[in-house]
Length: 68
Image (cartoon, rainbow, N blue to C red; front, side, top):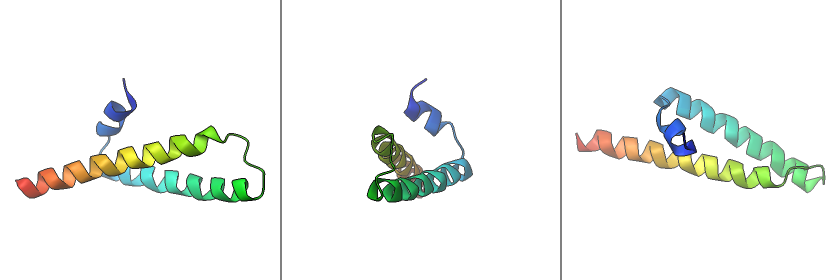
């Protein structure tokens, strides 16, 4: 199952919770990078992509709800 398919199977509340968790992780990684303590630099890109994926799905759902 692809990441997008897994994300689409989540409810709106689960998406909001995931987005909040990812933004916290991104915030913490920014501090780690600034202080030279970030070990997994590839994870920053993964987090950005996951955030974008969630925001895209939320936008699709809101546009679909407005179209009804």
